Length: 120
Image 1 (cartoon, one colour):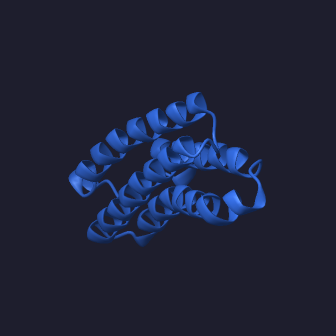
Image 2 (cartoon, rainbow, N blue to C red):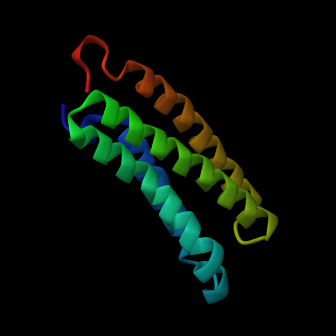
């Protein structure tokens, strides 16, 4: 299986791109403060899933997936800050937070399977 076939990776890439599309519309100060942090942590979700997948060692893969989970939680925090500061429409933030919450459940399930039955 290729990393591009992994559903949690596909979803994390889609969410990262959606967050980027929101942030690029902000003014300079908002992009330079909250925006950069939000994009970095959102992009880090997919990056850590990919790095763990490429390690080919179960323990390292799980570790990087846990890093991805931390970046996911950080993304929710920055989306909440962006919504509270009126940088992103409330409905957009709510939708993205919902997507991240769903991804977190899927990521947790994936972490539990790493090392089972020869999965990497």
